[in-house]
Image 1 (tube, rainbow, N blue to C red):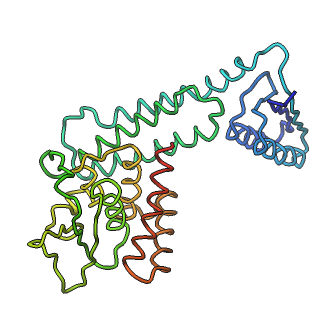
Image 2: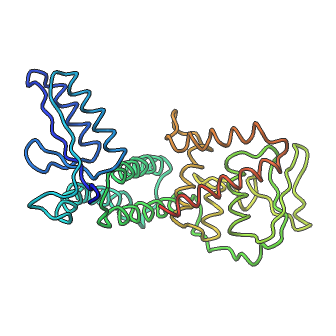
Length: 317
């Protein structure tokens, strides 16, 4: 019979209170549940077993004792009973995150000042990080994680709409923007590249792109569509960057695109001295593409694949 559980037991000298607390925090961070006094349980996974092996070494170095045992079943408890222990440990934390997210935009009909939107965006980012941390040890999902992500995505969408410093916008018809030449400034970076991806994948089925040098202008009389250029319909508006404006105007506020908008906004606006880890990683990738691309069109081609992968990953989540 295949092993399903890891039982972990340890003891650390009572004289070393800091070490005892550190070990306890390490076990909790791994996602273990207390089965009985002094006995922790985890699902039998290679990464968790490796984690416990390292922990045994640390406990021994402190003068304590520890052991990990793999087993197929626990006598006196059914597997579903044990799984419910894991769910009971995490589900209340998910509910707390949902409640905090719902409270951010109450009442939702009131307009938000720009400083307030920045504050709420930062809070929402922290809530999402907390949710992702819980998911990493959510071994037997009850559905609370997906509900929490839905609440966070809905809150992000409401916040994104509230950030606009213009009157409510009616969704633009895609049919009016087919087979167009989309024009923006040369040397595109995160906002122009991501907006080009949005155009290519969701707006125009057959787009062409032209990159303007400093002394050039868009040929609007010939039907060219400028974007991320001062005075263009699709450009920064209030606190919104071009990617967010286009997502709003074309009614593309899908959960995955909302998450992408958060990352693009962080990189483009650079409000924080230190970018969130996921935004910093995306920035490094874009910087690398800029370095290896020989032209703006090659850079765009390379960047489209990156945003395709990012969208697929967020859609899967």
